[in-house]
Amino acid sequence: MTALHDAPPALRAPEDQPVKKSRFRRDRSLLLMVVPAIVLLIVFNYVPMFGTATAFQRYSIYAGFWHSPWTGLETFRQLFSDPLFWSALGNTLILSLVQLIFYFPVPIALALLLHSIMSNKVRTIVQSVVYLPHFFSWVLAVTIFQQMLGGAGALNQFLRQNGIGTWDVMTDPDTFALLVTSQVIWKEAGWGIIVFLAALAAIDTQLYEAAAADGAGRWRRLWHITLPGIRGVIVLMLVLRLGNVLTVGFEQMLIQRGAVGRDAAEVLDTYAYYYGVVNANFSLGAAASLFKGVLSLLFLLAANKIAHLLGEDGLYRR
View 1 (cartoon, rainbow, N blue to C red):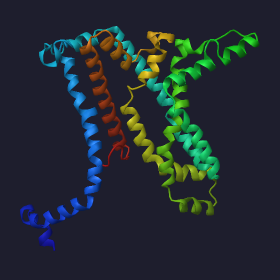
View 2 (cartoon, one colour; view 1 turned 120 degrees about the horizontal axis):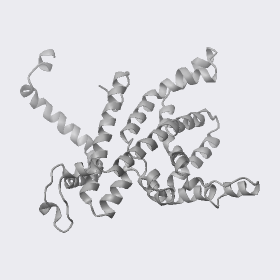
View 3 (tube, rainbow, N blue to C red; view 1 turned 90 degrees about the vertical axis):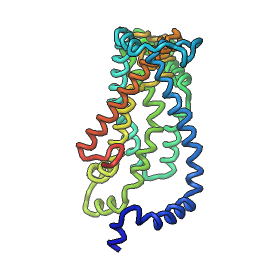
View 4 (cartoon, helix red, strand yellow; view 1 turned 180 degrees about the vertical axis):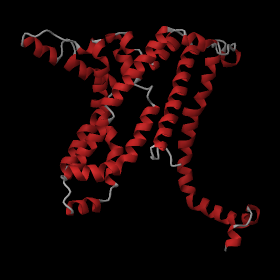
């Protein structure tokens, strides 16, 4: 048996072929189901990557990709010398940091709260209610906040009735980061709990029963069983979040940019749209998007490396 296991691949090939064919016949239905997903991934995720080559051209829609002149890194020199680009990058990092501090813990806390509810009926009702805003468009979500916090909204009507000065939160650049984060929490926190609820459901209930028999209270069971049980998922979601640290919501910013002003609401995505697509400077927009993609990849790799150094799996197990 040992001699067969240690044999060179050429000698094992005759026995491996029937095994591979048998596995292929066994899994052919699953492989066929994966084909459409792979095709969509190639068409919509990998084929568009060729468009980033326009960042190194003076691209013209009339000349096309093949006849536009190549300019090397000239577009990137133009991009990095633009103060508006650095302003957009600064706004993106600030908004992302505020969302990381105030939004990221909310789905975890909400999942722990739902997990502690003993009644399945109450849990289902609460889950359905918190899921619902995820399916609203950003236009509707911003409109709801406008009705509550805008100049003619419920907040200012209350302030006027009580003789207090009005405050239009929707157009205040100083509180825009908190406003955007509160919108993200209201719209996406319910959807974000799905992964954490799945992780909580995978914890062995016998651990809770044994801890309760030993006299452990609710908080001690939470600290010593629940949080360690979902620690790997929390780290994974944090790594993924850091990988998308430069994505803070294109539609959300585009809708509110006119009301709050470019200085507060301009982010990398809206910069690439306005200065690349609207002004027909496609090469500049491609350069901004390529810079964002490369920086996001570096953030993702750094976060994953730190997770490995701390003994966590991160995106994959080493």
